[in-house]
View (cartoon, rainbow, N blue to C red):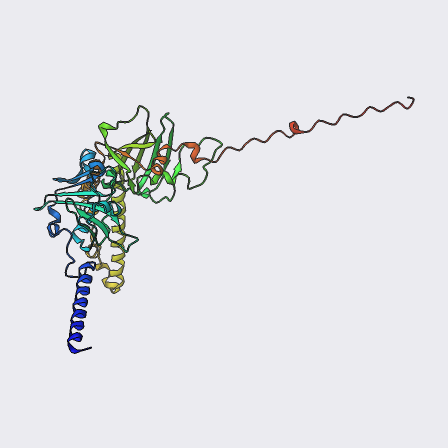
Length: 428
């Protein structure tokens, strides 16, 4: 092989190597560390708070949920403007803002279905079109399948673009409008309650109560003669209904009115808070309407008791301070250890220094709580979880031990004596 031929072969090899490197570079996936890794939605960065509406559109161009930001925060248009779950909305927007492109995927429309990024005008589309309003540049993003089996990330495609993408993070979107509602209704601990009164649809009453706020268990009132409760804890579940109460769904009250006969429940707290509940069943769902109010007499009684305890604690602290001062002085100086001197060392609670203001402050706190609860309750009918609704329907029989089954009378169960075979006469 002469030198000229060798040079030609070397040149061809270099060209081939360069072509291979170029092809490999062009086809390599984009990574978060590469220069091509870029924000999915640069127009959203630093403008999350500018988003004024989120529209979620599913297959066959069906609008699944419309979330709007108004003067009172976010609400759900399809639910007559019921408050939306702010935390969930913010979490979703922040995920969109943080998403960066990991890899370019197919531009072939026939393969979109595999990634879940088909046009939502198709009746069998699996993805969801997310439309963000309020930004300088509009956002219309088709969110497809989560790539869990492939190492994470979500397949997406900008509506109208041929290129699909794999982006980091799980951008899966809830398709059920109820999932975007603020489902928190109340969180009133059973330890706060003095009594629970249930009235069934047929008018029968079941009442559970505590005599003191420190009692561990509720008692059952008016237990029938000859019966007893199934256990000392039998009624405790009745007091837990309002603790961590969440709705499965919500409807405008005008669109879901109570039936003629309903279950009623009154939850009365020691401090005077009362929550009234009316519940009914329809088409396999459990509905309820709620309202909060103040029992002024109960509130006054509780405030008087709490102020008396505060004064007793203060007087005890003053006596202890007096003793400490007196013990530290000589016998001749003990008389100088006056109550006034010791009292100055003990902070006077508002219940002692200004009982009227203390009373009003306590009432203001209660009334504010009632206002907040009624802002949540008023004008709405809620679909409750079945396990919560079941507590509204309890009866006296559910609280008691079963009646003993009467045993059959022993005499009545004796087998009849076997008939004796007649004895033949000896003479026959």
